[in-house]
Image 1 (cartoon, each protein chain N blue to C red):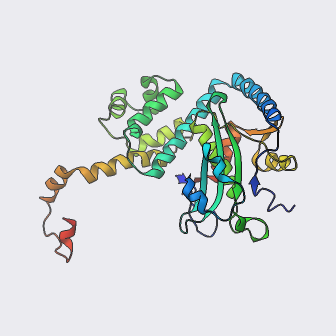
Image 2 (cartoon, each protein chain N blue to C red):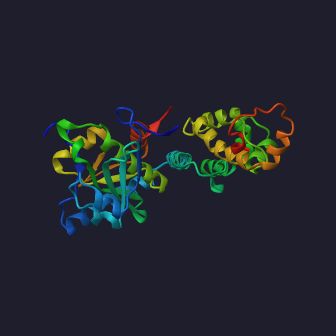
Image 3 (spheres, rainbow over the protein chains, first blue to last red):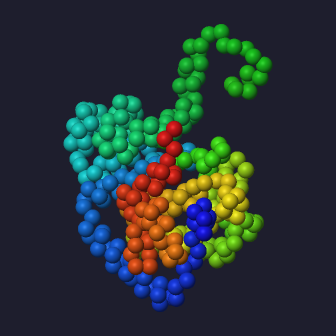
Length: 169
Length: 153
């Protein structure tokens, strides 16, 4: 068999139910042995990878979800690394009050903070990914903020009068 | 950062669940995929043409904290000498790793390959042997995801 087509499929195993059960049992035993040997560090690492890929899925879908607000994401990060908010704020070099405002949805994070979280997470959570999470909410806010749109519109002079412009009003 | 959007020749790809109706229409696959619908079946398709180039069936065993790859198949035009798109198997295995991490299984993915292919999976993807099963977890699982799924652009 040539190298190229060596792996065109993983077919159904040809084990009897008894053989399969035996193979599964052996795997489960090994699996739980390894789980019991896992360090806290490895568990945190795995949970962060899980968080990262759930975030990537969310960004890929591009549909806003309350459960993926940046503040919720940050709460999960705090919970995974089992650190107090105060300690994390200190590690990230921001004031606890500001950290609290971000985690309570009173303030959006700046890009500088996202770089710091990237560094703090050992680069598992890239700033660009975090920014995309923030951006999904920002985009929604911009689209839905009719009050601000009207307010700002009043400040604009000499608006371009082009054919079809009415469609965009 | 997003999931990898390229295999070859500028075509975007997407991995998503497949329906029974879609499975019935597929012609370039040999396995009886409809039988797999009691598990989770995913298609790997080219976003531009909607051509399905690979299929994957996985079983998420929550009580055992592992994901088992039951079946994986690459479409006929992508096999052997006429191969058009590389990396299809890698992407599908890496996708199973991603699902495993998301489920909280620490990236643990197992499969039972044909005996003659055991070395291939060990050498190419970093699987380890546990009796008849091969399995991958943690860093090796993440390495596969980074290699096959992540687009850093």
